[in-house]
Length: 354
Image (cartoon, rainbow, N blue to C red; front, top):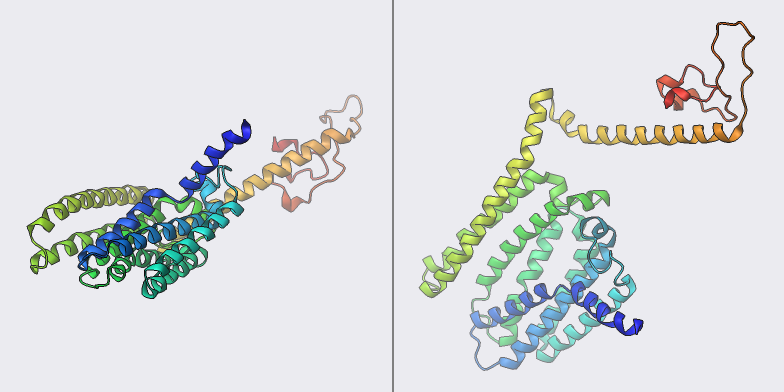
């Protein structure tokens, strides 16, 4: 009974690992690329290409979660791998299987679609393993791979047409989205030593950059209508999408102001000073915290050794005004490792640390 109850949970974990919404968006992007390129009666090749894109996207998502396992323990502990619902080895096998089936479906459509699929698989692997932790390069790579779904659909339809218009929009949209995700994942990325664009620029500048990219996207969506490529039937839904993007831009600008305000208040308290001094405050603060933690561990170790040894110093003679001497320590710590309050009597248990 317990084995049967684990089967649905395992299937649910594998499904969550692939991010079904992203796979659906990839399939729809392939269909849009085919339609904008002049889809005729080629229904099966486009359907196969859409399914291939969804499977390859699922493979890339699964492999990316395996690479980001330690980062996701901080940023997304509820994901299948950090939560323990799925093992990394199983995720790797699933990723390889999905990639092979996706490339095989692309090959059934034609050699050109197969070549595009192989390039995308290699790009997804390179992004997750190498480029994701490098500023800007990872963002550009994943944006380009997302935009590749539109020429993939055009190749399946057999007519190139105007696939480059939605591909350009998709590139700008995913570029802004990736920058926003870098800002959201700064805590886990910094803990693992990753150098993303948000960590390199800082959260306020990264948010401003993402807002600028989205603003370019809004401006670019109007260009096809201005040049008469598309009519009012195109402008109406695009205007609604642009309104949503403008709301996102306003939130990003507001978030950037909130991130900048604590730094400005700190400058008012301590003075502006050189830029290098302000930039160096965070490392100095972390170093001080590390030293304090080390001193706390030393204090705990000394107290435990003193209580275990049971060695007492002889009391002074009766009638003496000097206070009783403190208990001796078998392993005194060198003076340089003790705080100033404990350097008076290095041979005794530093009760002044308490």
